[in-house]
Amino acid sequence: MLEFIKTGKMDFAVGNCGTNSLGPGTYYIIAPGIVHSHAVKEDISTIHVAVRPEFVRRVASEVGSESGLGLPFFAPPARPASPAVEALLRRMVQEARHNSPWRRLLVDTLATELVIQLIRDHGVAVAQVQPADEADGVSRAIELILVNYDRDLPLQALAAEGGMSRYHFLRVFKKRVGLTPKAYLRQVRVEQAAELLRHSDLTVTEVAVRCGFKGPSRLAEAMRQTYGVAPGELRVKEK
Image (cartoon, rainbow, N blue to C red):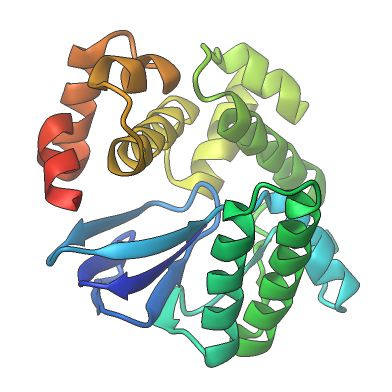
């Protein structure tokens, strides 16, 4: 996921590595499963781009990285955007708003250009903390969560997707991601709920249902723990 700040300011942190203050013209980019946090300091307007891990891996492989060893990641995760990155992000927004039959193809093409430009700007490293088959298994489980976060996803189903036993999968997943599968699923749900609250007119109850929470009270509890505000307060704060 990449978030580019058009206006306003936010604090951004990855794990326990300290906080970066990001302002207009800067962005952060984060791989699935990496524990991070952000807090809005001023009224903010951003561009969000979410790209599937397999797409990033394929593009990185085609431009010559050793991405077959694992999911590529970019360092540092937060920095000022180059003119090329900013132009691509703004073009992606423009094309995504067009109601045309070729919109999806154009956006996908721009996404490919964006990944290539990010590799040029950052260089690319390869995450490889487990054997390739285990890393791929965790990546498949993460993708299952990202696509089906609104559904119940028991540990057994995620372990089967990763091709491991439940207990081995739990150990490998937590080692790579830093969270248990259950905690990661909850993080994905609350982040998706925050996006809907910021950028849609759905009611809090509708957002809760769409994001897999068992009612608005569960969503409110998760929002307070993650963002320190109730769902309605987040919506007002972000406007």
